[in-house]
Image (cartoon, rainbow, N blue to C red; front, side):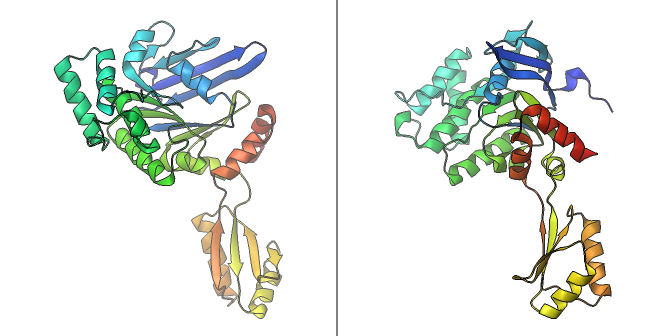
Length: 324
């Protein structure tokens, strides 16, 4: 079934942005389904933050069309702003006032009544486990607490689409996992999240779809699994403790790469169930027993480096060659 425009949370077509003679975004297209996490990956300077700034109406595009929650950002920017929330790379928290005062300030900016503002602030502070710290200056908060407060402030206006621009940069692993759970909770409640991140594990954990931005162009888009399948290098590793079994297997599996020191063989494989079953059936038929079988598949690190280690046209051409 074809997805219609009004059913999309975000739709960008031919998005372009330049600063002087430097092209930051070179005609990129993407669509985001409501209630999902869409992650934009790319090296520093790839244009991720510029894309978020355009989508959130902070700056204008040079060309292209963008619709957010069904509204054209060029003709209905106010309607777009009413539907979105933005948490940037740098915290919007005012460290000179308390967490509660930060929340009430956001309530005032959203024109909530005093009573409604206090209710919303209290609910969000409790939801993000900040009630005990609510009366303390934000300057005393840890990095993780400040980031939770930042997102809580973003939610005061009850947005259905949230832009998170590198939300966990600088956080320790525990705080990062806490933030992941918060994002999952938002999505389970129907919120759409547009995520940019430097942490590939983060995109792998959270994103329903991932786009890789390089040199101002989108060089790949798909699920984490689909992107991993684009990069060669997957293999099955068989390890033997007995030299005779190792030699027998090496003679029969001529396409395998030998490692005589560790008595192991490496067989190219995409890691599919069919390929694994074929290898196991072959071992049984030859009466050869491997002491260890491990499957190695490319991860998002491999995808990232493969697609961003060359200028965008080269990376795109290499991607097309892999897909054939």
